[in-house]
Figure (cartoon, rainbow, N blue to C red):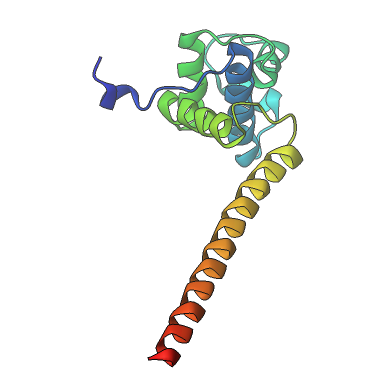
Length: 140
């Protein structure tokens, strides 16, 4: 399959982390629609026990592909969207799954702090360079 169809290669992650990240995304999407788990499983075809679905969201149990398709259809998103969001979550967290939203937020803030530090450092270097140029101009 061409690389442009499957997206960039997934960094080395363990299956459990990806399973948890997909579950986190399913939970986020369900909650965004303000559906409880029992409300949501009633929207799914077939008879899915609430506890089984809870295990998918918690990353305890792998979700069969056909079931993932049904879940995504009920949520109004594609399987690709869910997988992509899960992959981004893992990448943003250094391939380590966040255990709660505070950890995810912290990981993102650390990344932002690093970017700001590099920008400030770059500006300080530029300022130093500009001061040197001014001193050189004064000697001319």
